[in-house]
Image (cartoon, rainbow, N blue to C red):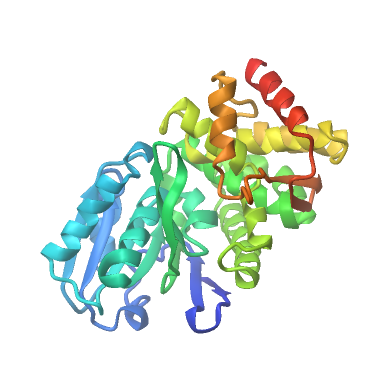
Amino acid sequence: MMTITVDLGARSYPIYIGSGLLGHAGLLDAHLRGRDALIVTNTTVGPLYLGRMRGMIAHGRVSTVELPDGEEHKTLATTAVILDALVQHRLGRDGVVIALGGGVVGDMAGFAAAIYQRGIDFIQVPTTLLAQVDSAVGGKTGINHPGGKNLVGAFHQPLCVLSDSETLHTLPDRELSAGLAEAVKCGIIADAQFFAWCEAHAAALLARDAGALNHVIRRACEVKAEVVAGDEREHGRRALLNLGHTFGHAIEVCAGYGTLLHGEAVGAGMAMAARFSQRIGWLAAAEAGRTVALLAALRLPVRPPRVEVEPFLAAMAIDKKVLGGQLRLVLPRTIGHAVVTAEFPLADLRAFVRAELAA
């Protein structure tokens, strides 16, 4: 087992990474301390891992709630189901919510924990690669709104994150590739050597080689932990973790939640960011080509679906990186270095989006 610490002072917490951790007796004892717990899972993950999760909790009352699976259910109405369960099972301020599932479960369970009785503790037990390398780390919780992705939410750090790479053996191929998109993102924004490692080990990752998967989880978590430690609430550098997300969220909104997986939309969004950076003279053509080639090798889409231009631009305009009404994008300058910028002509962006959606 590897342990990475997200250093946030009094809110610091460990990320446990390894194979066979789920069901490991005693691993969560220090974090639970005999408290009442509500396990939040979904109809896909529950039948696979709920029994092992319950077996890790030796003391305290344990209740469960099982949600429907899918991004389209990441709503206020579904979050209300979690809140109803917390009330029904009478969890107090000392209770703990345990999120057992992918990014959707983690985001909603964490948001419910953040707002129930003005905030109770929660633990992330991510079972998808995307959640293990990205969404379970950093304390972002929330839900979607019909007008935009993740527009409603709160920063609420977990007590710990338990990432068992064995859960990836039951992950569908598309979900595996979706998670790899968020790992590649870490290489593009902060670690050129890690990006090159992903290029060299793409086949091993798709083959679910245990060593390769554990390495990619560890390195992605290290990058994210370092960024989050320096900018917990995204006032500056943390926005780099949104590479590909402004385009990607617009893809999800316009195509309809659930049409593409989140990581697939981010993959297409990163390819768009690379091509746009090349268009405005920043990213070298060879590095843009490497970016698109790696995403394609990992079986991710590198073009957006054909949707309407104006709704797409409107979805981009309500992105959380907009400041003072000005759209900002995360764009790579080289592989290993990206910036958050508004220094591009809007006319160029409009023309680029129009061409991308027609390609």
